[in-house]
Amino acid sequence: MGTLKPDAVQATAPELARTERRSDGSLWYVLDNAAAFMPALTDRTATLVFRVSATLTERIKLPALQEALANLAPRFPYYRVELRHGFFWYYLEPLLDRVPEPSADSKFPCLNMRVRRRGHFLFRVRAYRSRIAVEFCHVLTDGYGALVYLKAVIAEYLRLLGLDLSGVQGVFRPDELPAPEESEDAFKRYFKQDIPFPGVARKAFHLHSLPLFPGQYRVITGIMPLGPLLSLAKTRGATLTEFLVAVYLAALQDIYHALPGPIRRTLHPLLSVEVPVNLRRLFPSTTMRNFSLYVLPTLDTRLGFYEFPEIVKRVHHYMQGEIDVKNISMQIARNVGGGRSLLVRMLPLALKGVAARAVYKRLGEDTFSGLFSNLGPVELPEPLAGRVERFDFIPAPSRQCKTTANAVSWKDRLFISFGSLALSTELERLFFSRIAGMGVTVSVESNL
Image 1 (cartoon, rainbow, N blue to C red):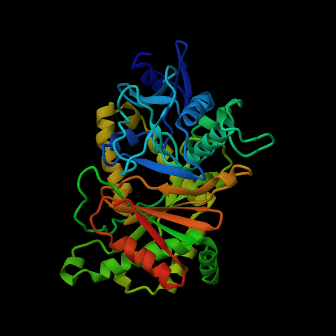
Image 2: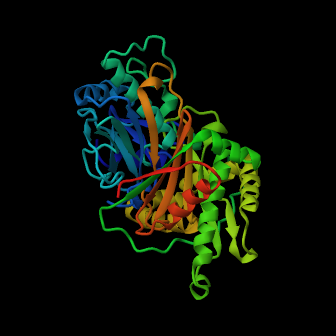
Image 3: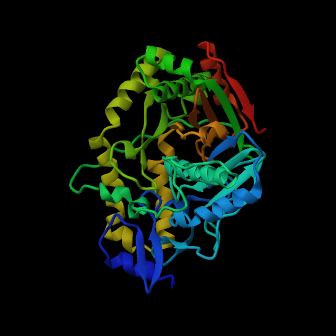
């Protein structure tokens, strides 16, 4: 397919939720609204690559895993693609002559994915001992889509090893046909014209630390019993995510106030945490593309020091008010509406990249001090659940925030993973120490 075809179609075709396009018999995919400018933001370190992994009860047999990936490739055609570009836009083209293959895992996850290199998938499957990990570039999907894919891999892998899955529901199977809605751009489906855009958030405080050596990405994972944490959150009138975000903000506040006054006065006074929201809970959708936006609970340090119960209360009421169809619709309107602008559409790709980096800095990483994403409880039907020990969810590296966190729960345990490019581990220490100080047992693992 010639590189100008997608640009010609996008210049004349109406905006559609479906991302599949055909030109001269060739199939290709439009990037979803959240992913449209992501390729311009990536490099070998800030890869926009995140990880979801499962540790099984037995060591991985690579031949069976490789066969499972090959069997599933036709079930996920929208992931079996490479990134291409024309004069105006990036797009995704199928790699029909290739299937994903497992590779050995690395000490440092989420790095060195060459998303713009020809012939390379935008995700990979890694294996180590009894662990299967899938690493996805956000150009393809969000945490929901990655988890659905990982569950399908686990199910097909165990089926090949002889596990009887007859009657098992709730996982994608190789013998199913993908529904057209799975590859749609759900942002465009729920886009509404003529509604106001949200206000622009102000710049936030960022952690100051020397960086790790190039090529390193530290992951510190805290493992906690889920029950006591749910009880702590409930006694404070909050959900688990709201409670953990409050712990995160409290740790940032401790770091901020520990700085010398002259240094503190030169920094932005707002402490903000980006909390992604899975929009499938608000807007009915089966898309396997990106469909998440975020809310931004914030503390203004100019108003004084916040005690922890006050932080929990503020986070709870803010998130309950912001995670609402009307409020999220304003974000969708801003993001989709910006892409529909004739000026944006007619900018050459190189200039779109410059604009994308500037917009992402101003509307994105400039506005939050950290990120906390909770994938929630993972559900697997029996007999699959009995073969899995744990799940992990590791965030993509962030140059500006330096340290971010993801959480996932499995059965009766919660796994919180901080990914960091910073030499300092102060944020992680303060976060887990506060939880331990509330009487919750915390065990900590690190790859460094």
